[in-house]
Image (tube, rainbow, N blue to C red; front, side, top):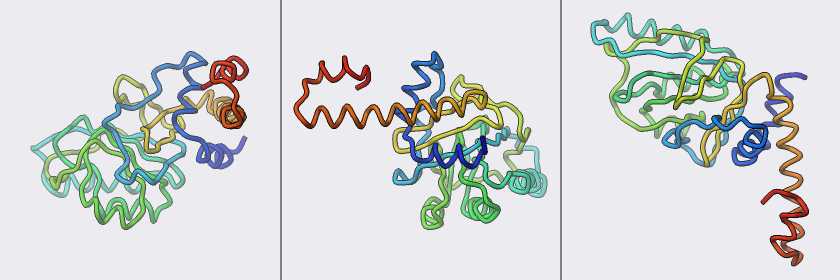
Length: 217
């Protein structure tokens, strides 16, 4: 199945339904920490993940930090969602020019277990960013990239490049790549079942009777 087809179908889903399907399959640890939120709750983000990680290093000069950062911008694949584990909770790991660069290069969005700045500019740009906090402080002379495309861990969840992600106003859910096609198909079926249940409820069917009929609620 084509990756683009999976992404387009995932974009029509919502995180609650995807989580419910994963839970029923026994995949319970699939959600990023709830503090990671979209800077624009009206924007959803779906796609194949490309990972990066970094760390604080205050011995670095400006050129070293910026060459490290721009290497990530250069190598981020078009069509991917970049997901970053910065191993830091003090500075911003995304800003206006970087967001504009990624958008221009075809990256779908950016998710970070850290911070963001230039938020007003990024909102006007329309580039989806999920983060934990805002701060004016940036990476210069303080932080460097340590890995590109390698497994990362966020909130106890191991994330690999090639996994799929869906983010919306409720949060962020990760789908392991090995089961992505099956989970997306099952989520579509789940949403259709919910629609049928909703129709019954609004026509007067008792909630318990509706649950026993559909086994969802």
